[in-house]
Image (cartoon, rainbow over all chains, first blue to last red; front, top):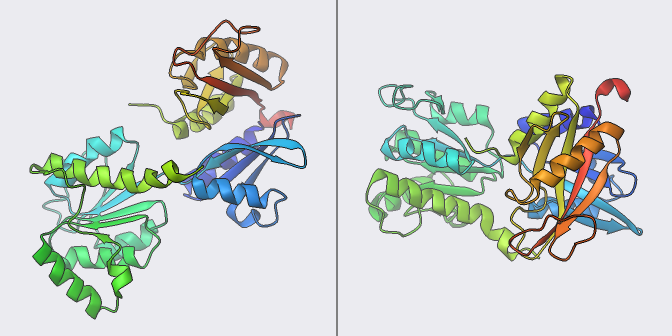
Length: 230
Length: 112
């Protein structure tokens, strides 16, 4: 592999853009295919298929074997709320190799002392999220209970391709949230994307247990389709 | 901190930029209960330092040994490990699976 190709792969990954490395098994010729180049590539069908599954693998075309190294953007969780639950999520997300970004404009909550070693943004969610760019490899989680903070985040998430959207709160709280989002112009299908009550039903009580149930649900949403893939 | 596949490609680039001879091993095919999925990486330098995993420990030693040859002659190789394979490789996977590992050199830009 040429160092230039390796560097390009790392750069695409850092920019959260999917890319596929094509290696001819016989001879070892290689090319890196970025999303805007897929359509014109001779292996477009195979590349598209592997990318959709998020799986690297061997493919064959015209009697020649190729290995496709699929590099999908790193899964990331964006949370509104520098609260107990998100504190517990920090070490758990690290072990699960999920990037975590915490947004909370309340600087009394969002302190580096409470949240060391994690990306912490103290802007309002609409500003912070515009900078982050929500994509299909991002999960959005609203944890503040405060509509002023959670709602702008939820609205941005519902307008994006986020693979997971979840919001903390009782059924009553969520009922009021649904009313607000409906008034803001979101239809039933869009609002149904929100996981509420949030998290897997494991009877979670403590903040750490709730963090576990949310992360469990996110991992299940992220990995579930792989189980069904051939 | 657990090393992930993404760290490994960054490590490969960093090692190559530092002027070290580097090989990258990638799991390209698995059969049965192979411990690491297709696409898993192991990066190896000329001194035998390595990061990542292609099997969870069963065949890394053999891959690292072969990587030295790859770094030496600059030619990629396909390796196969498993219980059914007793010809070239004496290393088996305890889980009973089989894996194919592609080992390639990382070529510095000067040689392009």
